[in-house]
Amino acid sequence: MQTLTDITLGGERPLFESHNLRLERVTITEGESAIKECSDIEAVNCRFEGNYPFWHVNRFTIDRCFFDVGARSGLWYSSNLKLRDTIFDSPKMIREMHHIDIRNVRFNDANETFWRCSDIKGYDIVLRGGSYPFMFSKGIKIDGLKSDSKYPFQYASDVLLQHAEITTKDALWESENVTVMDSRLDGEYLGWHSKNLHLIRCHITGTQPLCYCTGLVLEDCTFGPDCDRAFEYSDLRAVINSQITSVKNPRSGLIKARKIGEIILDENIKAPADCTIIETER
Image 1 (cartoon, one colour):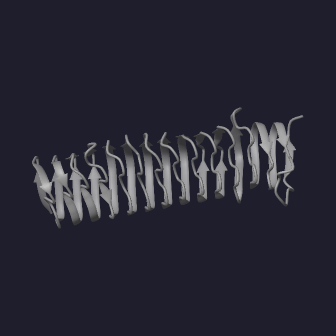
Image 2 (tube, rainbow, N blue to C red):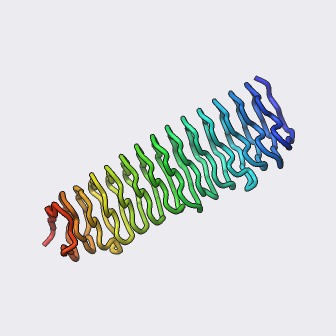
Image 3 (tube, rainbow, N blue to C red):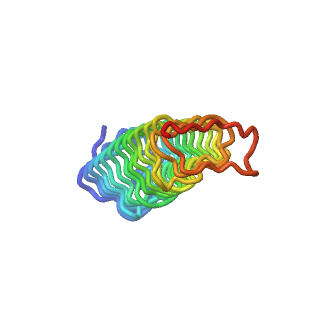
């Protein structure tokens, strides 16, 4: 494998169609598409400043690198990525990609990051700012996610999240086959229009959670006091180990909670309108 060390490259496609190449302490300055149509690339302790640095790359490792704001849309149309201990200040990263292994990575502008990706395995990921991370992505397993980005995981499918802290609005809208375990979900309108959303030992806050859901399951979860008008038009089975402020027009299934402040069943309830509601503390 050829190695390039302690150099600066810029301009248009300086490493186009490179293969079996290791970069150590290399800086990619202004320009576009530095590493394009490449394979078997290793980048260690490198800095990326120009646009679109990794496009159409197969089998590559990025370790202890930094992507400046100018390196926007930096990793697209690529596969078989190992990403370690790296910081991104640039938006629109990691799109249209497959087979991604991520550990200890921070996205300081997570706008439109992880779009239309598949087979993502991640540990200790931080997402800050921006909107719609993980939209249209599938096959995601992440242990340790901290995110304050808006609208994460919309239209995502086949997802497992563990030990997540998500503070946002409209998380998991129209998602399918998602399991979230041992996590905190803080935001308004959680999980609307989702299918087969499974929440286990999660703490949930925010108004009107989990409405219009199909196949919703909650196990040993707790709700904050601002979780009002929960479960409207949802088909669910929920065991809540706390009080719920209010429940409104659940469509079918079972809700079991310690106490429910208000149960709203009005003329707008939808068939079959046969949800069983149980309070375990009197």
